[in-house]
Image (cartoon, rainbow, N blue to C red; front, top):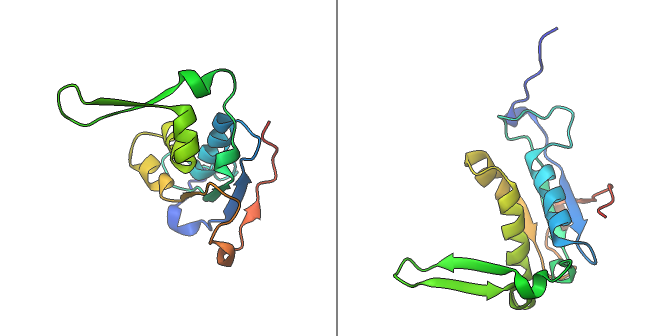
Length: 145
């Protein structure tokens, strides 16, 4: 019996909704990254893009444990000398909670073309409404602790 190798054009992609309300940001991001990669499927193939679409709602209500809201920073650089910009996560979660969740998921995906392609299937919303009802998304069944 030969080993099964999945092909991206032969797979059907489902849509899943993850509700982040009251759940740790990192746990939600880790679960979303696993779904985007396709690791929940029995036909997972590491070199193939076989993941599903993920919609994360209520990103503004995701929690950061410990003192991360005051101590953790998001850094970026403008490209100029002395151009390091830092934003604390309490301000980032108030102003752009969808960006904070997207950055967390992006960091958990592979840093290559497979990860970049998987990130295009992620949709993050700060509130509980989304515009993907036509795709008939399913609620993610496994519990996120």
